[in-house]
Image (tube, rainbow, N blue to C red):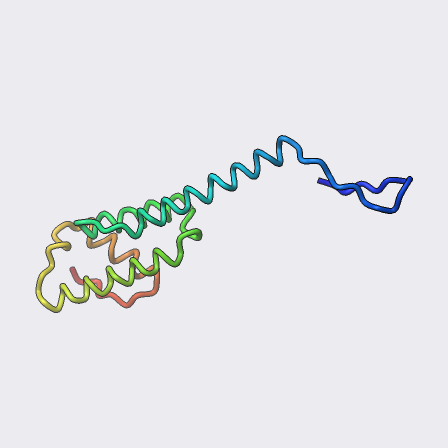
Length: 119
């Protein structure tokens, strides 16, 4: 999109919208709608914390986690608090699966949380 100056006048002419511009606008709007849907999914309650861990891992592996930094941070804070509470009370139901324990450990450590490597 370039601005053209007419020789007849010193006033720049406004560029005309092209089909590509309209496509870009629609794509940006669609991307924003999808981001909002993903944010709602991230913050929706689930029965198993492992589902949230899997979701965070998927978002990071897709390379789009920068769009959801605040939501991921809030969710990991909740997971860290609940895993800390569970270890104090002796209830480690979520640690029954090695995969879930390893995923929780990796995600929390990557985010900078101090978490024990013991399962």
